[in-house]
Image (cartoon, rainbow, N blue to C red):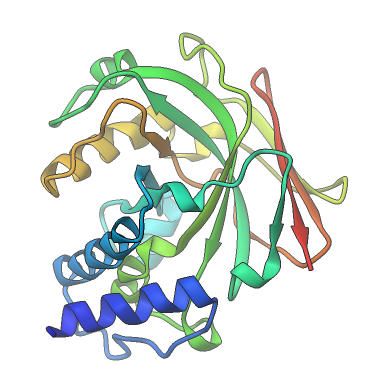
Length: 255
């Protein structure tokens, strides 16, 4: 077995059993291409177990975060059907290692996007938009990782919750939002924090997916990226997002 497949198995098992593992790249020697190859092989293990591809998640969609990480582009991960949490339902804390949550905007596509596209072309492929929450979870011990570590670990993606879908032909460039935990506001932000406009995140998702030979497909969800810093979550909590004009989404964390 190649080293990439060994790392893919290690990270897939870590996610599946919620067991922390050591960094695979403590010295930062992996290239981003190698890290994405590990991510792809890890997600393929999910598909082989019967899950279906459900879409793409975008990461580092804050310019400040890109500068902090020393990169000039967003990162992305792959969503599978087993990662979706039905809105309003409980999810077991034991599924995760170091879980955090961030508020996002989600797209669902009515047409594929098989190449680089303009913002107008990207919007024409959108069926609907919705408020959403992403559960992110590093599988590494002591919450220590390099950028290639994060990418190999499916960009820390672990779960996603989507609220009611709305007409995308409205201005969602700067919608105010709050993320609350047990009814208390934990984060306040705007969709404008997502690359200045969430549609830019969808354009990037189309570009990166097509370049990887996995173009965005009709029916897929694209999670546009965090609109605020992530918040740690604990057992027993109720986490919700309220987004201007688009509504709410929530989930409960069980012991």
